[in-house]
Length: 175
Image (cartoon, rainbow, N blue to C red; front, side):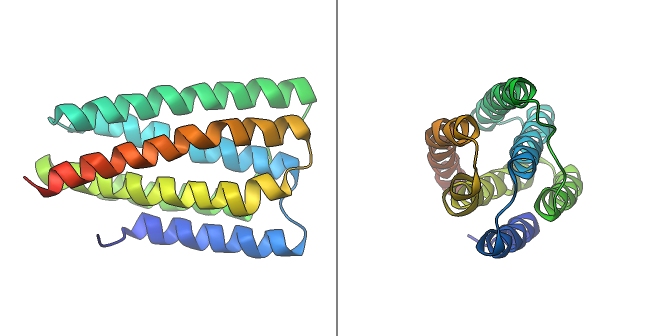
């Protein structure tokens, strides 16, 4: 699988976040901003996929991304409200948003099987990078126990999304 430009950009964002974490790590408000941005990116991509694909499996997966990541953002929103924290922009969240804008522009230019492949390839790369960020940056850097717990509880769902995306990716490769 050839990595998409967005996956490369996300990897660069992860590198920046990891380098930052080695220094002092993102603050809890910055972690909240990263979590919200990462979820919104997948919500937006899922909505685009739902409106562009004719493939039932891709459509079903895209709807699951919208549903699951919307639920996580609602949980994160409720938690930051409870804690009195405002999610903060960081170099990582800004870079994620920039890479997502590039991905969306690329996806909007594609149709049919090319769209399905690009969307699915990106979902595989994106979820792998999110898992890496969770393990290497977000959980180790979170100071608030409830924030760390939320990220820890969400991790298995992200891993399941990755496996589901890989299954779709493999089925598309057979066509």
